[in-house]
Length: 233
Length: 295
Image 1 (cartoon, rainbow over the protein chains, first blue to last red):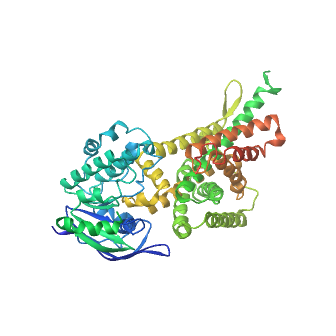
Image 2: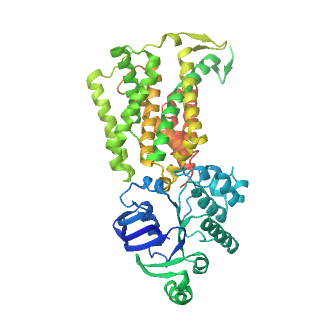
Image 3: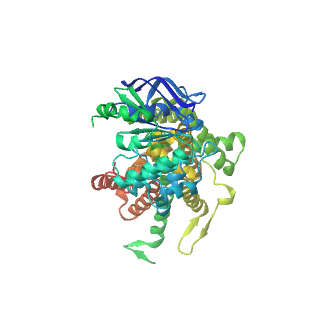
């Protein structure tokens, strides 16, 4: 599979604070790739740097043939990448339906609202309610569901399982498998290695703002011990 | 004659009407301020000057180009809206993200400049602007005489407020606006051009102020200081209603106009300060304002 996303020597700053020190990684088309690492390692910052969301960046971020790092933030999604942030970003002043409809459809080939609701039936029942009145798991589903409509082929999912009950974590895992089968390419930030290891084709380990290791699914048996040491589990 | 607490009915109704008229201006102006504050996080002290500019544009349109009231009602907000767009792009954008104080000082300075320039050219006594032909005279409601133009001001303001509220609360465009008010970074990451939205919102707020200015021209005369006199009360209205709340701005605007009118009847000495007394009480009891959400 050719690489859909290629990041080379990516540096990033929040104001004066230098948080990424030359991240290099690639995500093959149609695969699920995880970024593993401890809190503050630079996983979330890597996703934010891809989107240009509230962060200054330098280096190369290539999506297919397009270079993203020099684009204005609102132009980046138009090339087919969508981001589901760690804090989920459900809008309190919008209803569930409005939250779902908010991200505009930018490219052909995205899922229809009906298809999204079929994937997340609980959102259909609560469409009229306030977005932030949903449970944590439902909010996460809404946050993922709304970016599936946009036509993006690459999804950046930031810790979709954080703070959720095990049964919901399992559901999210199933959803990610379904999305992979549908041909989405997924870059997944995770701290839950057990969860990530079941889904991913490739694991990157991020430490101190750099990628320090890479383990393919095929090498997982041999690499597991190494990954667990990095994560301190 | 019917009296209510010792006040003859026609006097009472007359003051309620004046209160409603003032309330109309408070509502339209504080609505624009609330929109701008919500999205730009700027306390726009130039809002009164934009209102005044709206009245002046109407005056110029009539006296220089011969364009009457109805044309001005459309063209003046458009012109001031474009002026607002330029202001945002040239002056406000560079200071976006800085402390509130910068925006406040900048817009305050801007208001002083606009007023100063026009006072230099036109003095401060004010110029009359005739009530348009179709709205002259009045009609008898049975219990009081209703000047047609004043009825029109109330109806037009209510319509503009209602229209804006519907736009913000019930349309997909409004949903984007509300979302961008909450989390502009994420909305931009969805591919929505938030900087453009911010510019247009400021332009729209400026156009609302100018609309109020045109409505006011036949009532208060066109005067460089007309905005400065009004804006202080409007800020009190915004604080009472709750910063950034659309519905709060509208209802509080009309409500305080009415309360002011009633105070003129029952305790005329207090009418100039009743709004500020209410503001002080609201700030003590509910600091986020009547419709504001505590942050």
